[in-house]
Picture (cartoon, rainbow, N blue to C red):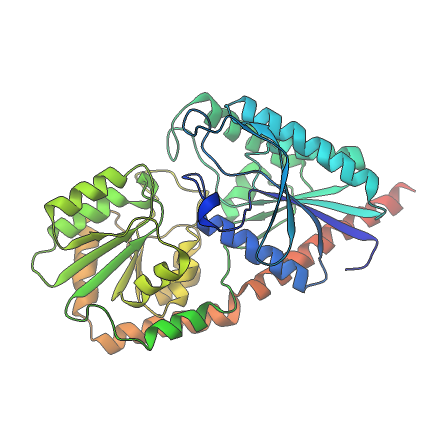
Length: 413
């Protein structure tokens, strides 16, 4: 990146270490940010500074009442400046917003770059309005990467904090200079006149190597048809439907393995007690999750799109699933059907009965046929969806936003 351009990245990224992980931590989101930063730094868009909000439940969900300003270091060696905040909603959002505003102003005064850009991963905490105000104050462009938007009463409760967050998405994003979105609907509904690109996520360059390593080892359980569902244990991920569908599958041939954490953990544990064919693994580290995938006959993505309005969601685990070489049964969120439909067994009816029937259909297929579909998906991902490819798109988009600013400045003069 030429010296006249500087990028400040705002996010909730932390080192993926057991001592730092809380129930609010999203490994999928954290990996997305890590790979994004790595890819940008490999391109000409080097990130000059990283501000981060520590992901933790608000008090009293967490015993931590206050977070002071501190510094952490990612495995890549990049330094993160952690924002201070009071961990009580809504003071949490306001204090984090104010802290981010002051840090951006300070950065704007110190940097000598003529072209500055604020690049934020989501706008919930810190609230996007503070970032927008700071960007305008220092004369910077601001681009938001919006990966999922919760709808009150659908994907989150109808509480005031969630209503306010949704409202600020509706009122704030239209004033941003650019958007990187996980579904086209986010840009079309929230900011129809703002330039955007759709990037559903990506895969790390070494992900296939990790899968191949596990494929060379014998499977733990080759005597059963093994079904794996991994991710957040919440309504939107169809946990109820998965458990009920498995109940409809008769016979000792089937095994269901579930991994993750979330509010429906009790439901899963209760299902395990009732059916010995179900295994709950809890929250696994990434390597253990990949091992689980490698030992599966089919992977489930039961992200609901009909019973709940998940119009602004695309499950990032799909990227891992498609790279695994293991066949997938999936509902049709976002661009799933249009772009990935030939690589997955699509579920158009989101009912336990439909899912059970699909599992029976897939399990009856010749193993070689299932593997061929999984491997075709892997090849497609390697050619089109690595983070190197995806961040090259994002880097080019950021340059385009800065170029528009330069052209706008020339017109004004």
